[in-house]
Length: 87
Image (tube, rainbow, N blue to C red; front, side):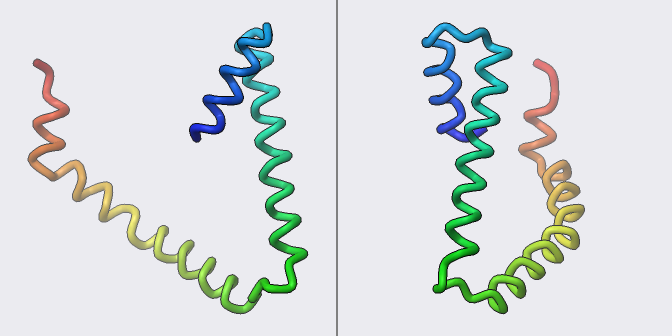
């Protein structure tokens, strides 16, 4: 969760909401914030769609191809193996 989520959650709970209702309200407010950002971005005349689509496709492809190696190398790292051992 982002720091804005913690701030919204704490403010809603300080206002008297239960954790369950505060969490649901926080998610709804975060969705409105995200949707507003998407609307502003899509309607901007400064948006370069060709470059954005190329960048997005490269990010997805890189994430799909690079993820297994990163996870495998993390668990093979000596520090990770030491940290996962019980005391």
